[in-house]
Length: 227
Image (cartoon, rainbow, N blue to C red; front, side, top):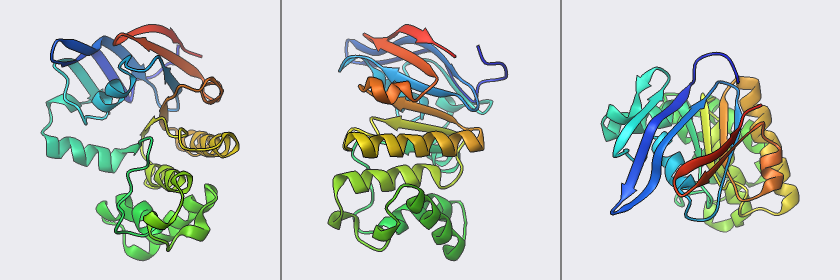
């Protein structure tokens, strides 16, 4: 087990949809610098778990602690501010703002935090370059491919130096070579910053790039292997 306090922790976390427990009394501690794959069959509760950890979904029971603060007790606006300032989020289909250019999307977290446009653009271009799509910076997101949108979304999740990056199937829209390059960049950037990285995936090749493995079945942690 890693030493040191958790940066993000679930304690008896439970999320229900009607009679179904999507997440059932899960305990999970993510340490700074940890790299964790969450795997499991479709419908096992993986995505709901990540959304609850991020404060997108409020749990029905249990607790979520983020940087020594009880995240689940905060208001929706306060949880949103924590995500914008201290977390990076990546979803399977990118979820970029279509009215903005690629670089403007990546700049967003920095500008929300008060960064001026020029340095925010410079940092965004650095991240886009690291992910191989800097040449698309000034194009609207609707004019680039799904894989390119996803790489821009990964850049956006990393640009502000978050303490935790939560990625739900971030390589699902990518070919195998691009997926490996994107994952390597995510690992390198989060490792350099000492940030925790969590990747939900069905792909054992993706999981092999990460140190720890959590297997979820029927809303419960069925297996956990921590390096």
